Image 1 (cartoon, rainbow, N blue to C red):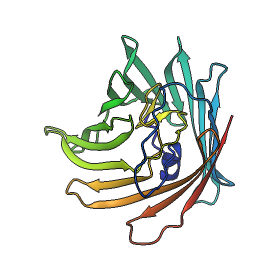
Image 2: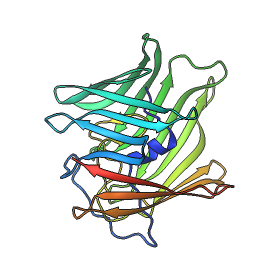
Image 3: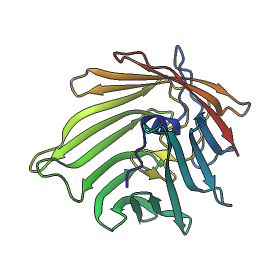
Image 4: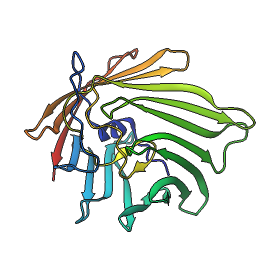
Amino acid sequence: MRLRLLSIALLGIFTFTGCTKDPVPTPAVPGIESMKVKEIRNGVNDYQQFFYNSNGQLIKYQVEFSSGTGQPSTYYVNLEYTNGQVSKATMPSGFSNYIYTDGKLSSIESFTNTGAKISSAALIINNKQQLVEMKETFGNPIPGGVVETKVIYVYNEQGNLIRKDYYTRETGSQFVYTESSIFENYDNKKIPQAFARAEFFLPNCVLMVNNPGRIISKSANGTINRIDRFEYQYNTEGYPTQRIWYVESVPNPVTPITFQYTYW
């Protein structure tokens, strides 16, 4: 089951900051962090919460957000572990099983609550614990529609994600490049590694070690569809305590959103 949330919730997983030039990022040791994020809040009924077990492993992620009905809506992910590795993720609409090959996550099988197959995602993870490719095949695609998607992940020498290229494939055709997301203006601070969010929860994967300040979304023809810019405040340990999210390059102005971070 994809862990795709509303845009605010999605962007809230990461911490991004805007700056005038790229400082030299400070690499972090994958899997080691001195502080774990407890909550990311941007309103009374708009927040994300993170819960861990005694081993420091994330066991629940919950999002509450204001819906169009005026009533708060809740989304959650519960995680189960086997021999120290995530084996299952359960969401309101279904669940995902995690499959390992030689101790490394290799695929994720997703199902509805009734057991119907949603998709199968094949992952390529390098020796730096970076996700470099994800190919997702849908179990019951719409006739004439997309049967597979592919995402390619590119990193800089500091270990930060700098580009995601998206591809789709329809029945009887080859993969077609559709769009890209460009990550830039990284700071030299720490990013809370609550979990690596790609299209799924990815245990032990490191997509970023610092906080990007800008995300540029481009279509296949190079047209810029959107620019998201971020500014931060930090605590003495170098983790974000506040993030302001600005949306640029859209027809109508968007009010900036401020997120407050608390830690366990």
